[in-house]
Length: 406
Image 1 (tube, rainbow, N blue to C red):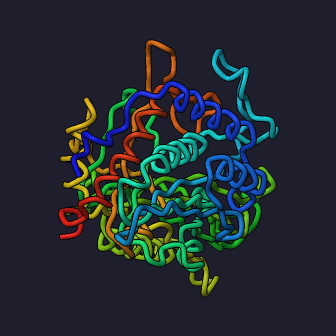
Image 2: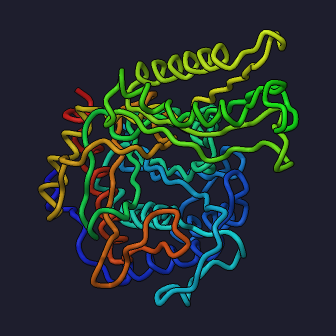
C-alpha cells in the first residue's frame, strides 16, 4: 500500500488532545514501580479511544490494536515513571506543575506516554488499512535498575511481537529533530560499591593506624588515569557520587565506603574496567599494609551490572531511517553513541527494533533545561511529531515488513 494514501495529515483536535494528555500525566508523577495513579489514568485514556488495557509488570499496562487481518505484530513502548525531584515553577508549567510534592516528570516520560497514546488514536482510525497488530506497552520502572523491561518480558509482554520501537525526548537536540543510529546507541550502566577497612586511631599516633580515607583518596585520584592506559577516554566514563566515613575530626576512622558508577559501550571494556578496579585496590592494600596489623587494610567490592548496551538492530534501523527521511524534515543518523542508559536494551536483545531520540530544545521559547533538571520542560509542538513518527513506522512495517526483518 502506498503510504501517501494513509499518511497522517494535520489534525489540530488530535494535537490538542495529545498536549492535554501529556499535561494530565505530568501532574501525577510517581516513582519507579509505584505508578498506580499513572496506570489508572492510562487505562482510562485507552478506554476513551476504544481500547481495553490490561495490567502487566504490576504497575504497567498493555493494549493491542488489531488490524484488518493476520500479519506481523509491532510494539510501541513507553516508560511511565517519574523522578524524586521537586519541580520548580516556571513561565510554562503553571497549568500542569506536579501535584505530587517532591516528585516530577523530569525526564519526559509523560510526553512519551502521550505520544504512544496519540499514535494509537491514529492507528485505530487506520485499522482497516493494515494487517497484523500493534501492541502498546506502558512500562514501569525505567529509572530504577534492574528496570521494568525485564518484568514486562517475564510477564509475556513480547509474546507474539515481531519488532519494537521506543523513543525518548532529548533536551540537547533542537525541537523536532529526529536522531538515532544503527548499532550501539546507549551505554551499559554499572554501579560500584567499595568498602575500605583500615585501623582507626588518634591522629597523634599515625604509626598505630591504617588510614582508609587516604586509601580512598588515592584510589579516586588515580583510577581514571589507570583505566585510560588501556581504554580510550571516549569509550568510558567513571565517577563517584558518595563517600562516607568517620565521625571525629581528630580520629582516623576504621572504614570508609565509596559509591560510584561507570559506563561503556562494550562488554569487554566493562570487564577490563572491573579488572583494573580490583588490580588498583590490591595494589593499595599492599602499599598501606603494616606488619603489626595482619590482614589490614582490606576491601570489599560489589559491582552491580545495570542495563546492557542498547544496540539498535542495523537492518531495522536503516529501513526506519530511510522511511523517516521521506516524511520528516530533520532526520539523521549522525549522532554519536551516548553515555545514557535505558532498559529498552533488554527488548532489543529479544527482538529487532529501534530506539529513537526526538529533540525538544527550543532556545527561542526558553526551553533549554536538561533532562532530570527541576526546571525541565519540553517544546510541546514536538508531541505531534513523535506521534506521527511512531504511527508512520508501525503502518509501514505492518504493510511491508520484509525490508525490516531481512
